[in-house]
Length: 318
Image (cartoon, rainbow, N blue to C red; front, side, top):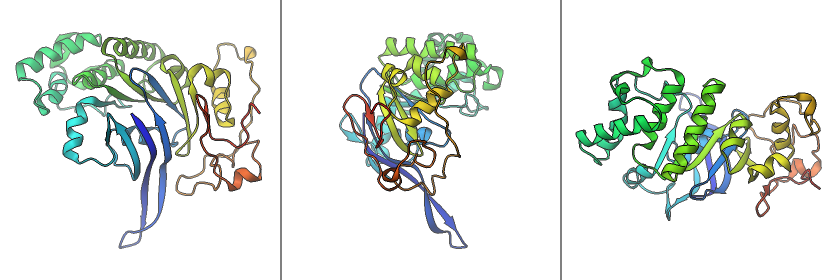
């Protein structure tokens, strides 16, 4: 998948006639590529546009502009009928493992629904597939007659993963799949995702706040702030040689087992994240960056580089 200049703006309406007076720029000119079989981590503070980016890639949100090229087709411009045909290759695991499951349906029916909706199997074949996929994600096939409320959070997330796998997709958007789980359960789910990736040759976009989970599962990491990409590189490179001040700040916030052994210099950041309805001119991070200069307040930095991409006028390595 190749994402080119993706934008998602939400109109701000006021008055009796709902006149548009501005836009919330949730995703603003985002471009990156995803290669088969890899995991790309998407990290940043709350409200930076991570989840909106993921939802826009699979057309749960219609992009305002830009291109999402998947196997030669632009998902941002094709019809709903054409998009429906591609749904089998694109799936999403939602953040909340409870609200994403219909509480009035049994698990077996929830898992069989994608196959029946796309007419890919008979009811008998779908039931057999449900048994197999439940065991694949570590659940008993006898659970298929239970309702979502009868499961724990970790079990519900496994069900969400199972549902995403039912159609044998090529790309799965993992929208903070472990953020609502206990640490021990997080490890189980992450290991499950890695095992399934090898077994089914899956490609992941892994959206998360915690850098620990992203470091463990991702091949490359994309750092976002206020709807824009700040930095993108291989996971090891991001953790060992961060070049954007914002990335360094995120790494400083990453907990280590022994804080006295922290080997990186602390960068102090002040202020709150600006509103995406009124983003700052120039570099969107300049209002909180301790290294900002006049050019940062006037000119938007371009995302440049080869293997290590960065959008900053004064990278930390220079």
